[in-house]
Amino acid sequence: MTAERAAEERIGRVFLTRVIEPGDDVAGRWLRLFGVAEVVRRLREGGDPLPGVNGTRWRGLLARAAHAEPEADLAAAREAGARFVCPGDFNFCGHTLCCPKTCCGGEVLCCGRVVALLDG
Image 1 (cartoon, one colour):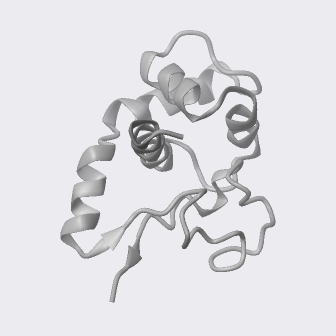
Image 2: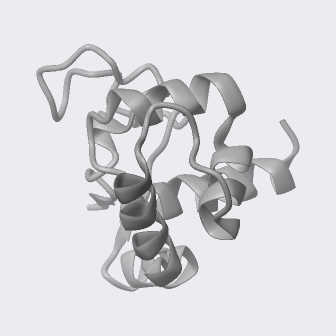
């Protein structure tokens, strides 16, 4: 993966932590089927719901997406001396640090709310 694509994926995952609840199995399926970039695009652009959600839930996700500012979240984390970790990073939890579920293989956002690790 190129550095540019890795940066885009990180921003996408930060965005998803603002939109999708941790442990959401339906969203995990979306990530496996479509990838981070496509799920983010669909949530940002709206349109027809992704598979497995009704119209009410989709509208709620789109409302969250409209207010997500992942770049600002990353800047706030940096300012606080923290960093966002995601699948592929050395410190990504691998489902042992933060949750009892065993779905953290980068597919499900069960650890998505562990947005930052404090350095130091």
